[in-house]
Length: 342
Length: 278
Image (cartoon, rainbow over all chains, first blue to last red; front, side, top):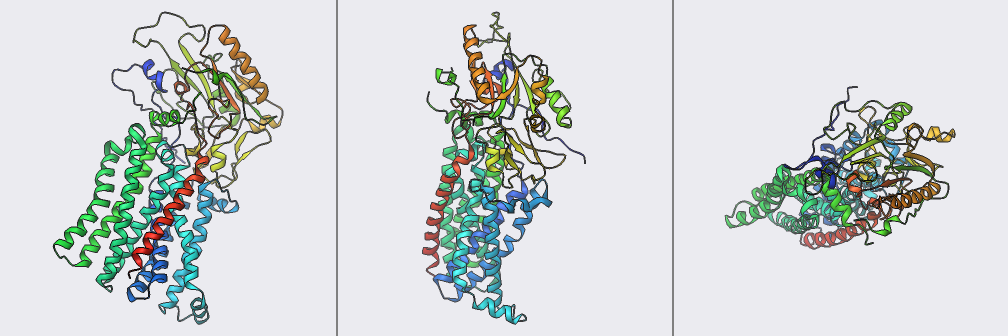
């Protein structure tokens, strides 16, 4: 195996500062903590797992609250979508391990103070509910008519009760990922430990609503009222999400929040997450209504933008966290801040 | 500067806990500890090259580096002029052999989802290589940047405080190799007592900046409750690339889940209100 070292000894020495000068405030500007290795696999998992979790909740609520054709369509789309986005999740997580063949070692222990341990179990249990609800839906849709006993069993199960219990785990899967990030020494994540869970959960709801909208709008078999209801839900989620993102940005402060302001990540945060992901969908709705554009077209456009923005949010949060872990000034700002008064 | 409270030297270590005392005022920067550690633990070589940071070509602790000697040159004063007064110790050099702190309450151990990271009978923190599946969660969970995933086997590695040697009644390889006794090994309670005496002695000799890093007052607050690897430092912790007040990351888990629960309830209500109109 040829090992390639990622470590380089670049440092942040400012122009005009001597080595001794630099050594007064940090150790040559070298990172104090190790950043996590999480990259694309984990970013995709955060995105897909969030959609899976929240579309399950949407499906359950639609099934519980309304009896219209539209509600049934939303429930069906939500359940299938939930399963479709759940299936890649464990695969992505296992591939991310240094030793993928040992993934089951996580399933032999439960540690309540380790969000990854709790999350593994939460995802496993949610996977069960997700699969079961999708099977019940398949039975309702007549897809399992060839397996009579199974079909009858599935149709006899308490669909709504299963959905409710599964939704509790759905909410958990949607939000624990934010808690997982904040229970680290990474300054950007740890400083925002009260906000990341809610932010990931809200983003899960907005992206799942957008995904359900997109599936229904592309499928053509849904009327305008249903799309408007989903649009309202998405607008609500996006408004909360915007508030949480701005709170993260404010709470991070000048030094720890640097990756959200500067460089490529800063631009992605401004134009991608806030611009394309939150402002552009809202604008699309407004312009679409003013121009009396077809509801389906507006829905497809807006929900695609929400999905792109949701993915970029996970990307920026993960990558900006890694950047803040590499910055000793950010870490010391975090550990100095919490220093007790003598 | 450092206040008096940091000189108290108390620890949450359990009686009988074994650990290190690294007295940086005795370190001569020979890197014998690094070499002895590599040899005993059969660790592969690191990135081979020059860093440009004084004599430190190791850089930091990692999967294949369990002792790391830091070199800090202080050759000019605050005004940029060359200093011409020799301080009582270490001339204008600070050298410190960094190592895993074997925290009394360890972030890596609490984060580990497989149970691979355990606390041994010596109260040290060890990663069991036959269990670790390389999830990498211990890496960012350490407030000191100690564990790291290896590029060779995909698993997390760090100092074991020479668990194999200690069980056989030997001291760890680095402490054995240290020619100036800058690295000392023994029960933490004894080491702390010795550290207190040494700091008092240094103060009497004019090194008033000396203090213990790793007791409860500094380096061990916010849930970590003390380190089993103590250090005697003569400058701010940041100068040695150590955090002034590290936190135990897991102390936030409960509150973080509570705020997420609050968000879940709020979003649930919002979703019910919106979908009711269907």
